[in-house]
Length: 74
Image 1 (cartoon, one colour):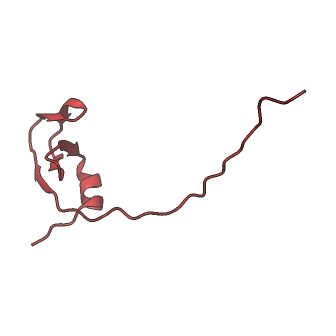
Image 2 (tube, rainbow, N blue to C red; image 1 turned 90 degrees about the horizontal axis):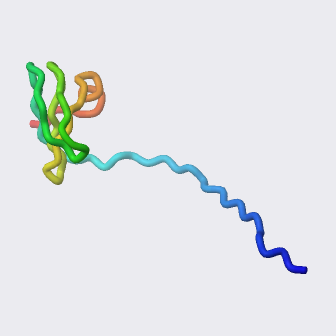
């Protein structure tokens, strides 16, 4: 009699990656602001940054995350 099913275990090795540097545009809002994102309508709170990605998509980013992630360029 043949065993029709075998158990196969695949182990993936984790690797470390660094995010490619990209130039974005952003502006900070000071009033509650609604923006259309890829996920639908979102509300940015006062102090949030509105980031425009490389394909024109927009999304809100909290100030602490923005400061930890982005640096101004001249």
